[in-house]
Structure formats: structure tokens, C-alpha cells
Image 1 (cartoon, helix red, strand yellow):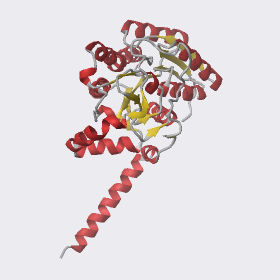
Image 2 (cartoon, one colour; image 1 turned 90 degrees about the vertical axis):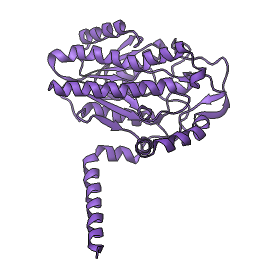
Image 3 (cartoon, one colour; image 1 turned 30 degrees about the vertical axis):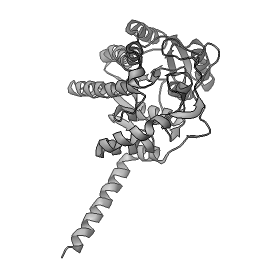
Image 4 (tube, one colour; image 1 turned 60 degrees about the vertical axis):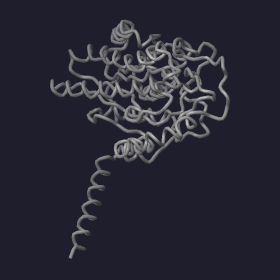
Length: 336
């Protein structure tokens, strides 16, 4: 998709992981990219990434749990980069532990970042988009918005909440006949630095549940969603599709399966370092920049056939309907 002018894009969680990959992708488009995150070193390098790719960057050190700070940042974006065209909520934090081992302060903090951070970003974006009746908000969701798994109760709860918030907001915008769009992108397990900095109380080091995908695959889907936000929801990765279908058909079976496999699947064979840094309360990039990728490059996939199917969903649906029709016709012919 080509653009006649440089877009102004805001990305929360832009200092690492998926947000960092999205920032790099928009830099290649020559966009004006506002980078919102807490980590100073990650923000500085993300700034360089965008500018080296051909875009203009504005790094803003902001905690998305603080609405006043988010709203102030949005005003600065419009003053320095111009009207916001796209706002992408990707910032989150989490706790890897059983619910019983998670303190209420930890749970509250993860919820304030991973759910209310999205609410804060959306509110700040819409306050500026409504007067001109244009703009797009993209929520970066997860397959865990539908299918909760053990050891991530705070994160799963936040993603479920985002799903309900998104549906409510979208209905209200459609009722008002607005040309502002909101869409959501449900991601699979992604090779991001969160598994190096997440607060974990597990005996072994945390890992994403395989199959694992590279953040660039997620970034491409997020940009596509921002370009075509009329779709209410995008699924990314074959594992996301399989999980959501299985959850719709047999959620109780999936409960039991995850009870057996979910604990080991989220841990490597390596023991966790007891004094490992965690970014729940403070950023941990003071010593180094973590970048977009985590430590699972040797196991992560950069492509997936589901991505092609998502881009051509109308044709795939038509083909599927045609196959069903042919099977039904064949069965009718076989009847005595």
C-alpha cells in the first residue's frame, strides 16, 4: 500500500519486541513514528532504527499506566509530528507464576500496564481523532485473549479485558457512523525479549509455548491491520487459528490438555537465576538494548501459511464454501 504523505504513527511498547519491529517497519515506509516506552536505552536505539530506515522518530519516555503522561505525550506528538493517523497499543508487562504465588500488587501492576495502558492510549488517540473524524487504533492482542493458560493469569486476564473493551468501543463507533476505525490483532507465541525480563517465579527460565514466531511476522500483520482496519480482528499464525478453533469447539478438553502440558511448555530446561532482573516495576535496559528479538532465534519461524490465507481471506472463504457445496451436492446425488 502506498501513501501520498508520511503517516504519523504512535507505538506504545516501542523499545523492544513486537513494538520495536513495528517501529522499524514504519521507518522503512518513511513514517513519522512516535516511540512510547519506559526504557531509555531501548528508546534511543529504536529512534536510530527508525531514522536509519528512512523515517522520522520522536522517542517519549512514558509509563502507559499513567494516563496523564500518555495524554501529554499524545499532545506532544501532534505538536511535533502532526495529526496522529495510527495509534498502536503494544506495551505490556506480565508475571510468570501461579495465581496463588502472584501478589495483588504484582497483579494490579500487570493489569494497569497490559490492560489500562491500552485503554489510556486509546482514549488519548480518540480525543484527537474525533474532531477530524479520521484515524485508526490497533490493539495488539493475543490468542490468550480467548484461551487462558496456566502461569499467566494477569496477562490472560488483561488480554480478555482488551477483547471486551475493543468490541464495546467498535460497536459505539459504528453506531455513531464514525470513520475512525479500531481493530485488533491476535498474536501467537513470539520470540521477544519479554522472556528475558519478565517477572518470573518459576523454577526454570520462561519460554513461549511453541511454535514460536519472529516479531517481524507479527509486525507485518499489524501494519496490514492498520492499513485495512475495517476488519474487526486479525489472527496471526497457524497456532493461533488452531487454538481459537479448538477453544470454540472443546474448551473443556483444552483445559485438561493445558493442565497437563502448560507448566512444562512455558519453561526451558535451564534453571532460573534467582536474582534475575524484572521489568514489572522498572525498565531493565540500563545495561544493554534488548532489541526486537528474544533468545529463541534458532527455533522461531519468520513465515507461516496462515499469513497468506489471512491476506486472501475472501478467496479462501469462497474456496471453502465451494468445496462444502460440492461435497453437499455429491452427497445428495448418492441418496437413493
